[in-house]
Length: 298
Image 1 (tube, one colour):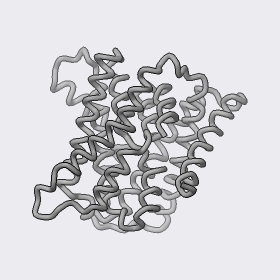
Image 2: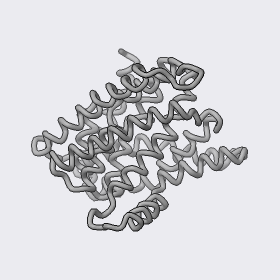
Image 3: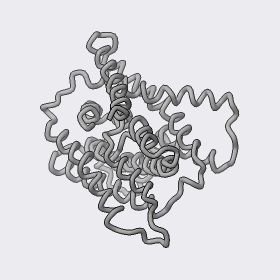
Image 4: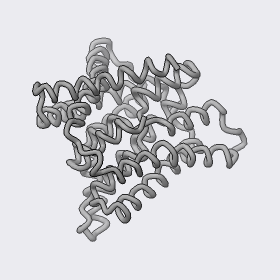
């Protein structure tokens, strides 16, 4: 319990610090959006690059495990989208970000340290698989579902989605990292240190920007949405993951490694990632309620 608190208290401490600076008048809402843009465009891409290239490329691909994990992600995303669109009556882009909240766990700041604490270095490979593939899938899904609802041409929608993906530095950093790993090249010491320094700024800066955005957000007005998000992220997501991995044995000749299943279950129980707030700011939708939902899900 002490180890878990040692991970989570600093997490909320940085968020609180951001909120206090906003309340003190040192930063405005516009300043918070600027900091969030800095996180999304400058420090999150190196963070993703460093995290992915730290693992051997061959370890990233585990087809059946990956397929099952992403089947849960896709199903949950669509379920959340339908609920938010047709029951909560959110706009299409808001529903897309609502759905992202429902299935994007806080891997980097809580999930990875927690898994390493519980299982040691053996957890590195399944974590790498989930981090790489799930980030690509989720960023693609939110780009696909935020297209203009008035566009009837599926070809136009696809082209627009692909264009938005090319403009998304987070996803592009994943592709560049995979390409770099596949090349077999070794990063020289100077650029490696440069990327490490930028990557180290990602988590605290994202949390600080989140704290700034939290000030003045109406919780009561969005209570139904926040309740639904909490149910999706902390109850439906783990239940679906347990059902897919524990109720149906592996199809291949080898059973799933129990450690991989444990990592999948732990990650599905995590609160919403701070990265979702940066994506919401990037798309200009659902930023305030995303910030609030991140605070209430732990």
